[in-house]
Length: 221
Image (tube, rainbow, N blue to C red; front, side, top):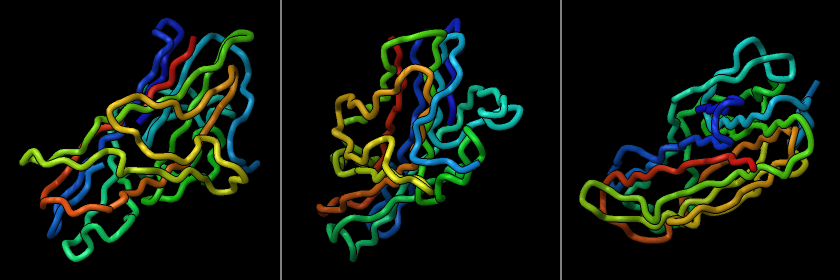
């Protein structure tokens, strides 16, 4: 999904990653030239923010060849199904329904699906400015139809990208119930990472489909 703040818009963009899934035996957890690990300089211009989480649309080619970002309302999901025999038995990798592998910056095959979710964007200004901030906010718990819950801090992510030498967005774990800062984005820079989400699977929980929604926000002064 992609949201682009145009010059007349507030300096705040938000993308939402929906966490949902289907039950199997016990439950399904609802939670998705070459590039480098990736922060690059872009040309200064009219103040704008751009954020893509999972699916998106870039019209007229890649951004570094003159493409234009646009709004995309797609909400991608990441999920995992834990069979009853494996409940509480340790970390399980989640998969995404996003099919984004190519960087909208230059078309380089940066992410691997269904294992990883693309997250990237830019902060552009006509001159010097304080940095923009990429943050995320998750609810305290995932919940099923019966009202049973799983703490959201059982969901973590590993950050990487094909050809990365260092990560851009650091790997981490959702705190749940509060916003957390992921990255400081300098003015006139593009950033991107590929996130692999994991469920800790460290407790016995009731059967059901547990779901929750995480929002990603890019904010500039």
